[in-house]
Image 1 (cartoon, helix red, strand yellow):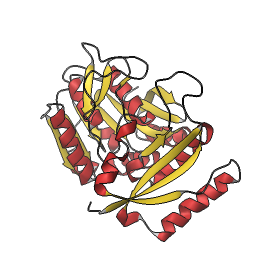
Image 2: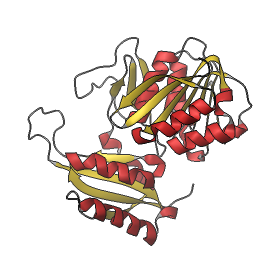
Image 3: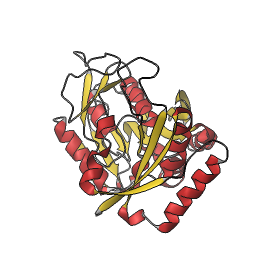
Image 4: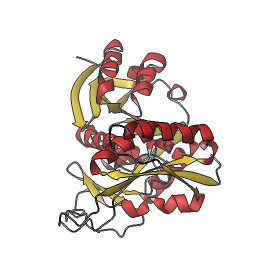
Length: 310
């Protein structure tokens, strides 16, 4: 994708309104990426250390910045503002290089599950988290520079997938990462002991980011490419992980034989599902002959672990 600028859309609200604003703006953001910015000292436990105002930001590539889009965003936030005090959005154009650094200040090391440690590439290794946690010997450390691809590890959908992989990956497991984004799930699979790992995405920028992140983690064993599920030979995998959106997941079942890629005794990890969309996804799973064996949930987001067998 070639772009000379990015449109930054920002809305100032409070902690209560920020999550609701983030979810209505997310579908318009590039690769679902949303930044929540709260000024103050995050390391200070005092109640007034952080300002009450939270700024929600999304970024839209130049080619999608149209008067119609801006009007649509204004209308959505206007209707939200009738139920809860939400101001109009602010629009700002950022050069490519300015965008690339816009979110880095808000991305810190953190732990997911029992032993997965997320380490931003530009942060000194060994820096502790805000709660005092450190990377421990034996941790699976993922060094990431997410770039413009979704999958920083901060979003609940990604975190739940990482937890599921930590639970399900066995030494030598074969893993297929459908819609890899930043490559975080494929890289985690390798570091958790997986054998053959294949990752793909329809967005070349995501493929490039995955390759860069794999290199930073000294991994050269991931087969990564631009394409769709239909481009992958119909062979079975011990683990197939899909962190996309509910309607895309349903389409993969109905049109691309998603379940056929899961080996007998294997697991299918599905994430990116809002709770209200859960029923339609479970119906698609059942229709394809699969069975939900575990549900992980963070707030309104759900991750399913599916078996192809009873």
